[in-house]
Length: 558
Ligand code: DGT
Ligand code: MG
Image 1 (spheres, helix red, strand yellow):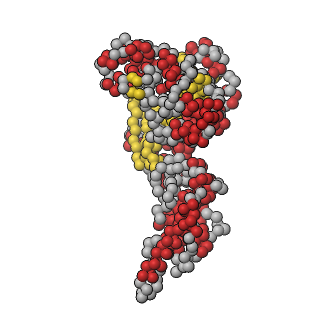
Image 2: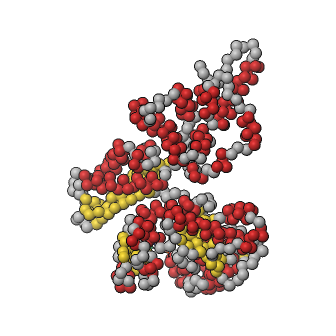
C-alpha cells in the first residue's frame, strides 16, 4: 500500500505487551486473599482499575466510586494512590523484556513495545526454513485475509508470536503477572490488536488485515497517537470516523496541522505507522512524596523526611544508579489566604553515600548526612523561626551516575572468570577491594570490614596498587552481569595461539603472575620482551630491565 508517499514496509516485527488489570494484580500479589474477590483500585473518589472479576459486574476504568459500589456492593477497595510498588514492578517487567531486545519502549507503567526484528531473523536463520510454515502458537489471528505476502512477513510474525508467548510466560513465572500481547509489523497495529483478546491472551495481525483492524475502531480518538485535542480539531472539520480521516483531503488537514503531521495522521487511519520503537532509558528522577496533616515543627519535619528517605533508598537500591542530586519538595499552607504553594530546592549529594548498593548495609552516618542536607534545604524554603504549616513533603533524586562498570579493565576479567561461580560474590569482591569508599577508608576501618584472620599479603597489595593505578573505576553505562554469557569467556583461536607464547618474565613472582588475567599476563610479557629487545640493541650498556610505567613495574621483584 502506498499512501502519501510512505511505503508500508513489513520488514519489522513488533510486540506490544500490556499487563492485565495492572494495579489490581500488583495488590493481589501483596495480599493473596484478594485473588478471588471483585477488587477495585481507588484513587480519591475514582476506581482507576479493577480486576476481571469486578469487570463482570460492569465496573469500568475510572468509574466513580459511588457508581461502582452500586454495581457491585461487595467490591473490595484498595487504595492505589502510592504508585511505588506499581512503578517498581513496571521496571521489573521492562527489564525482563530487555533480555529479548535492546529496543524496548515503555508506555505508561504497564505497556512496552519491543522490536524483535533482529531476534526473529536470528531464529529464522537457525531454523530449517520449511519449518516456518509449521509454526504453531496459541495466538489469535485478527482478520479475514489469509495473510499471504511475498516479503516473508507471515513467517516473521509467526516467529514473533512464539517470542511473545515466551515473554508472557517469563513475566508470569518470574513476576506472577499475566499480560496480553499484540504482534504486528508496526507499533500502531501491535497496540491495537493487543486489546482484541483479553485478559491473558495474545493476538497477531498480518499486514493485509490492517484496514479491517483500523475500520473496527469506533472513531479517530480510538487511534493510539490521536488524543482528545487532535480529535476535537478533526471533529471541527467534520472528521469523526476512521473512514472520514482516510477520505479527508490533505489540503483540509493542512489547515489544522503541518504537512508532516497531516500525513502522519492520515497514514494512521490506514494502519501505516513507520515510527520506530524508541529505547526507553531509566527514569529521570526517583521520588516519593506524602501529603500530611499540618506539620508545624522542625522535629516533625525531620521525622517525616527520615521515613520518606528510608522508603526512597529502597527504590534507589532497586534502580541501581548512584544519585548525585537530591530535591526537596514542600507544600506550604498559608492560614491567612487559605492557599497552598509547592516549592522545591535541590542540592548536590555525594554519590559515594550509595556505593554499598544495599540500604541494609548503608552507613547510618550517611543517612544522617543526607537528612542534614534535606533539613538545610528545608530551612531555606521555610522560615522556621516563624510559625509554618506544611501539608506535603517530598524527596526525589534527580541526577545519577551509573554504577561503575568493569568492562575493559582488569576487573572485567576477574568478574567474568568468577561469574560462573557466583555473581553475588564477584560484586562483593570488587566493591570490597576497590570501591572509592574503601580506598578512602582509614586502615582501622579496613581491618574491621575484612576478615581478621586473613592478613593481606605483600603480593596482594601489589595487585591492589596496580588496580588503583590502572584507574579501576570507570563511570559509564553498566552492563548487567547476567547479560555476560559464558561464550564471552571463550577465547578465539588467534588469542589462544598468542597465549601459548606468554611466559612469566624471570624477574616476576610466578605465583602472582599466574593469578593475573590473561590479557594482563600478555601485557606484562610483551613489556618484558620489548625491554629485552631494547637491551639487546644496546649491548654495550649494562643490562637493566626498563619497565617504566608499565604493569611490569609493579610486579618485578626488587
Ligand atoms: P487492562 O490492561 O485493561 O487489563 O487493565 P489495566 O488496569 O492494566 O489498565 P491499563 O493498561 O489501561 O492501565 C494500567 C494501569 O494504569 C491501571 O492498572 C491503572 C492505571 N490507570 C489506567 N488508566 C488510568 C487513569 O485514567 N487514571 C489513573 N489515575 N490511573 C489509570
Ligand atoms: Mg494493562
